[in-house]
Length: 310
Image (cartoon, rainbow, N blue to C red; front, side):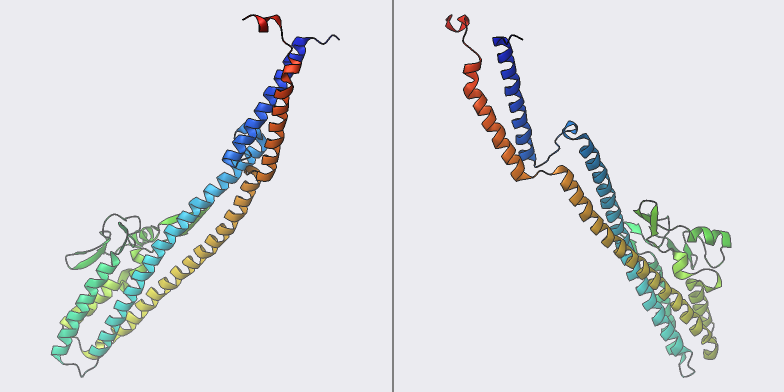
């Protein structure tokens, strides 16, 4: 086969362009610190990178959900502990007035004290996290507890006389966060769980206690409320225990996600990031090849008559 000057020139230009293209690739990798700058660089690696990035995004979203759930539970725990302290104070005051040595003046002072504490329980029941009420179930935008005609209502329902179907529906209204694919956790406590329902509803017990004190019930009869208040305090403390268990679970899941995140970051770096020393070496080799090609170009592309026509 006859080798023509045109063939030599064309091959030279093709190889020169190839060297320039390689230099462009290595320069882009160095400037971005990424081995894959476009899908065609490594289709399989790009797919693997996208998969890892998706998993990392999911972990970050679940981690944010965990943080929000923990913040909600922490606020709930603070409020529940305050409810416990209020019940404890009412219990202690009831224990005092169940003693026959208490005078009418003392009983009146205790009555006013208990009434104030009952009103404070309503305030604690309307505790909020940010601009959301934490004990209202699905009702997070308005205070769940309201005093209507002297009775405390929860979401416009008197829990002391509400039917069981209504109670069950209210108890199911828990705020949940997704902390894993298909895995959710409750981050709230409803007012029904906190204060109870029926005859043992906390506000119903306190209203009866206040009414009996006003009616002059004998001290030994008032002692029956001591046991009821103890029972309500145990119910409240059980809610504290449940909150603690949920927070502990969230801490464990959060720790696992931190490890998973580190592992996926390592995988992503292995797929995407460059070996800087290797890329610099390849760039220098390509530059040397390109400069050599330029130096010998005038020997390959011979001068023609057109070069002298000026």
